[in-house]
Image (cartoon, rainbow, N blue to C red; front, side, top):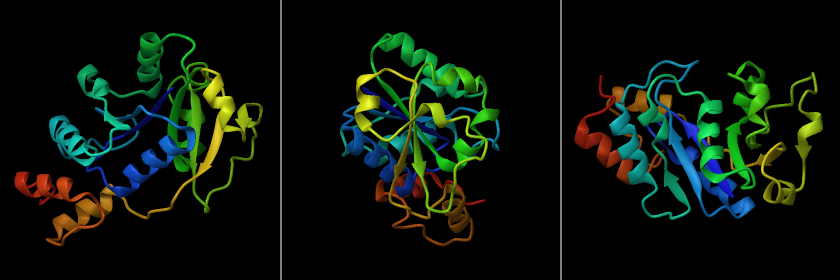
Length: 206
């Protein structure tokens, strides 16, 4: 079983890390991949370089063996589509290994606009990180896939949607960058190792 969570991680912060860890603990995942995207299709391009974002991610998770940095989207280049990434995982692990792809509830609300969205559930399960302020979309397309039993995801390779409440940490990369641009410290919003890297390389100051 492999867990997957993507993001620009520009920079990575405690909300990213806590979510990844809670998903791993809930399902008993020993291999949780954090994948920095290269160019996001629906967001502005990251301010830090690919190498810098990967280095910050590696620094952030160095002491947690369940969390692993995976650079495949950076190596592939171009736009980072989840379908393409999940296809590479499925090719690597075969058809029987469960894949659990975690995404935020806000992203799930727009899931039907994703590239080849209707094929993604043939490759992976979706773990939707639930926030109290959100409600499910009204059209109900997801209902045949919903499961409330974690074992459904552990024992089948793909095709389920699971809603997972997690600790709500109101932290964003935009907030971190804004503080740095104002000359203020984002300490305690992100790991000290990441802040040290940002300061050494003078990132997000302009």
